[in-house]
Length: 157
Image 1: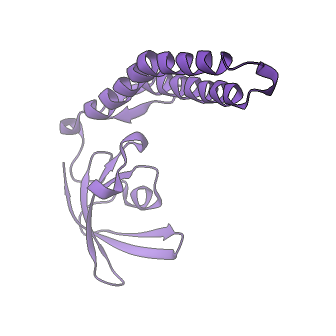
Image 2 (image 1 turned 90 degrees about the horizontal axis):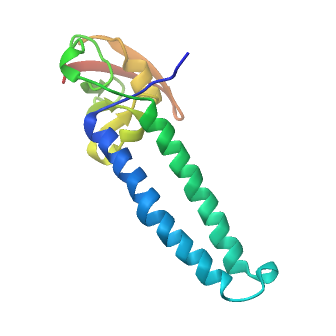
């Protein structure tokens, strides 16, 4: 069974841009670094050459990972998602029942998560606990600090 990587158009474009950059500029820069290190003499004792080859291997691994993500990507059309329940692409306003603190998060694909801008991965404990719940419902979420009870105040797109 194929595993799809659901994301927004912007998220997919970001991955494609990174992939293009690594395949063009990244590979060229890496080739230049290896050639420069090779010119410095005996390869058996050349730590700079070994480091450049290792960096090349890591870059090629990242290229392969990005190619897989782009190939399995499926664009999410948020207008087609039921806004009455929490799902991927939902903007959810929640209240911590214990301390009354309110937070607003957008639930996004793992590659698009950015806590500073309020975007949390669908794979986080909070997102998993909220999925499928509606306004007014409570979710008990297991987090590293213990359990949190979160009440859903609002859901939007």
